Image (cartoon, rainbow, N blue to C red; front, side, top):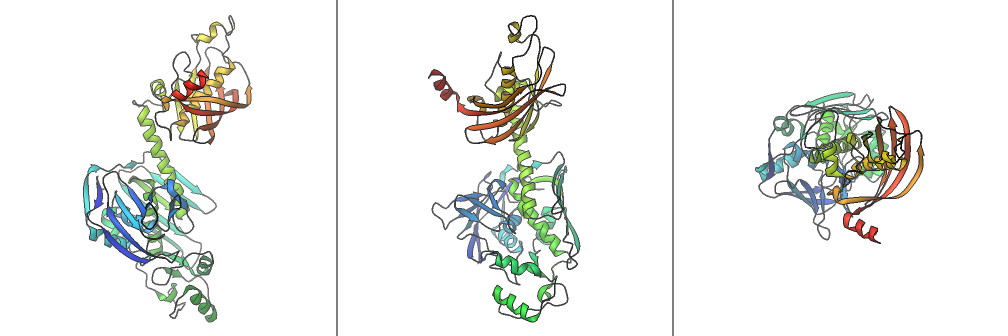
Length: 473
């Protein structure tokens, strides 16, 4: 795989009709600087809004992938992104003067050819690969979908499709080298649908620009001649249509025996570009679709962001430890004698954290609580859980050590048994709700697997200076 970032040398344009909206659009690819990423720009709108091509900006996955920011939308971006990612381009501006890119022939090949005309240009900065170092698994049992990423120092992808439909059957395909195989073996695979879906999709307001020149229609049921006429009239097709004998409407010739499977792989390459950086992984996908692809991409992107956060604060790798006490002090403003978390052993960004507090006789509060029968104050157990929950603020807040967290409410707080010197307090804290300056968490504290305290807490997040002003008032 190429190791330097890539863009194009000069602008190139293409015009045509969008598959689902039927609008006519001119799309222009333009060079972009290092670390710019892939962005769509709506030049027909006030301010020419830009939409980053990442899962955080996906707003719809109904038979296509749609990005949005504010009022700006770009529909059916997967074939365009497949061409960009398939050519290993990292930085590019994609300008459009309407809401949907041209569908062209229903594949990514016209975009690949156009980008090659623009000439690829290697940049000085290295690529920021997302390296999969653990199994990442996504399942949708209702749809029979499973996508797995496994560690590999390269990028490979295998796809299996099975629609339980005799007109298509089961198909497999695999790509082992983007550089050597994508443009020649996969880019020309066209989009497809089943005959029974065509009228339904049209009635849903989709495939307004679809025709038999930009999509494969797989014949999966018999139609009478009057039904064929009705369908062609609805779709605006002015030439004759036959069911044929090849299993494809009008007996259109397939580019490959397994062209539908290859197109599903093409779609995956485009949707996985929404992770925001090239992958090093082995991807295995069974029955993928846009919704599943995007959810899988979201999962991988989140793991990548989490690893970057951990690396930012935890400077030394330690077995069984996500954040040691030094990292915790970089994250939280608390210090002795009020830092009540010794280490974080589990961390799922925006979701869950597990912290450890080793309770020793040296704790300063035991001198007065209670002499001769030391018991950890319940309010400090609550404080320890809240501090562990403070680690969940890492994502989306710059310099968390400069923030203060003030309790606003505590609900359903219960204490089950005393905590005494020698106990190890294991605190499991889950995020319930989060807004810009408010957080609601649920915490449970355990000693040797036994629940000792629990509760739900709402807190406000303020800057240190703002906190000083509040306390002065």
